[in-house]
Image 1 (tube, rainbow, N blue to C red):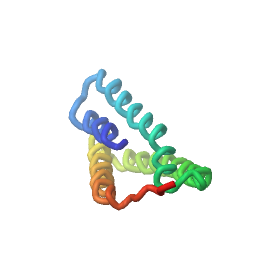
Image 2: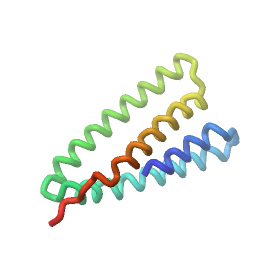
Image 3: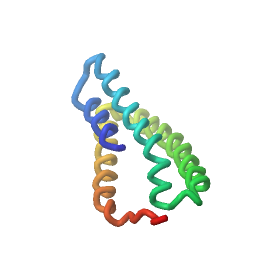
Image 4: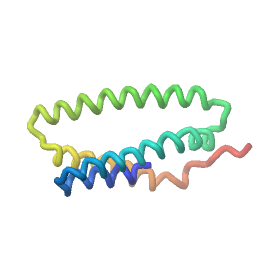
Length: 114
């Protein structure tokens, strides 16, 4: 889910052409599409369908908080004089770390056998 997101940030870092916005937003759309489709099925596979409602409620609340926090954080960075390229570099580091950590724990996630 985060690979298209990482690619979109890399596009912002290295390219400065009007068509870049369409590529960036297209990759963001792919990333969000994967997250919406795979999110629920992943939670159901890992924790079972018995608790899917409470898990979705928690993840939705965290998503709303993260969206508000991310917007405020990017606003503060812009106010401090960071360029969009610098913010994209910081974002790419964060995304790369999350992908690396996900790669490390992927074998430790044991789906519930029903």
